[in-house]
Length: 174
Image 1 (cartoon, rainbow, N blue to C red):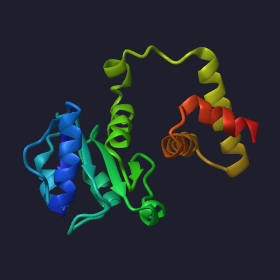
Image 2 (image 1 turned 180 degrees about the horizontal axis):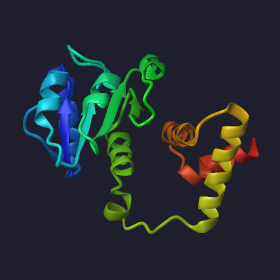
Image 3 (image 1 turned 60 degrees about the horizontal axis):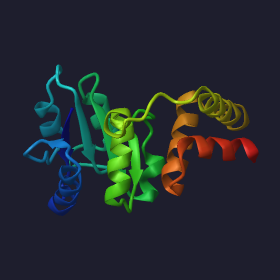
Image 4 (image 1 turned 90 degrees about the vertical axis):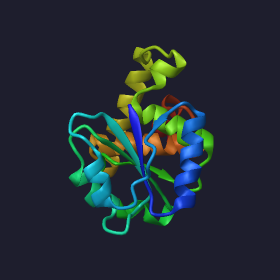
């Protein structure tokens, strides 16, 4: 799977490129500077992950996501105050500041590389049950969709540095 960077700021693009290349990710050589350029670069048959900020000169992240070929995944690195502005739940959001480790582990999880890169097996049935219960609790208590509940647990896990299943346990205990 290749990574396509889309940033209007050269410094931000260089920082992200260095972080990801150091972890062995296959990064496109050129950085897309606009939404139109990004959409032209992606091929319908290509499996890619786009890593970008909140906006490019011609489009914001939600508009770009709607224009991407099916199967393309989108990761947006944003300032915390921009989090509520991203409406599409299929966009994986990483709040700033982002460390190298946080970016790489988030991308590994998002792109499904955890089992390949770390040799982890499938989730234990008891852990899966706890996670499902936590999602159900969030769905009932806060009227979230399943995707929203999953994203909430995922974000809380990343923010605290806790394992996904440990965050689910905490949600069930409160």
